[in-house]
Amino acid sequence: MSTYELKVLNNSDDLAREAALIISNLIKSVLQKKERCHIALSGGSTPCKTYHILKDQILPWEKVDIFLGDERWVPSNHKDSNALMLKNSLLSSGLATKARFYEVPVDKCLTPAECAVEFSLLIETVCGDSFPLFDLTLLGLGDDGHTASLFPQSDSLNVKESITTVSAGKGTDRITLTAPCINASSKIIFLVSGKGKKIALQRLLDPNEKSSRTPAKLIDPASNILILADKDSVE
Image (cartoon, rainbow, N blue to C red):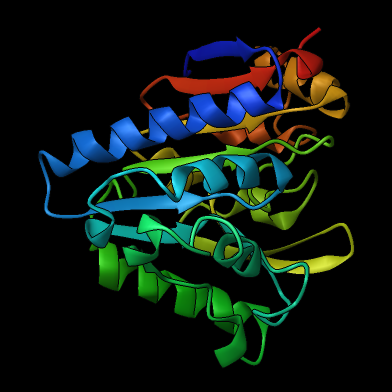
């Protein structure tokens, strides 16, 4: 079982700055050892603040490959698209525009299932077929305990052999990395912000909590998990 390292920041702005610093340092460290750095990023308002800070960091962005940990089954220009959020934040301007962003191919596929297969093939093509696929996976935590698009009681929680799978949550079909794929990441970081996440965070940290109710419990890599949280989500 993984050990959680919980770091509490005063507010969401401090959380965003700390996350951006940690991600920057990780990218630098990885690129001292490898030709390219592969990262999987989360959607949501909490990481969006981090991305706006991160986009101007002086890094060898041209050597960074960016993926999403999950995506809604909506067109890539839809207001709910995680890809659009990333393009409007991290990739909107600044140095980070030099990074290579590999979108979930929602516009090229007829069904979520087809899209999940195509996304898996894309990841394997870029990252190779050996684990770990990602040097960093950044995750959020939903108020219902979901992470990526692994929702409570969904069939996606039981997928063991694939890199990606289909899921559904909050009224929308989705494509998501599977728990085994996320667990194979070299480093995993959760960003947790706001009073609405307090119960979900308590459940995540509870060693007796079941993953069927709190799917974030499925994230159990060999390395420690870093949780960056603001005071509102803890106190």
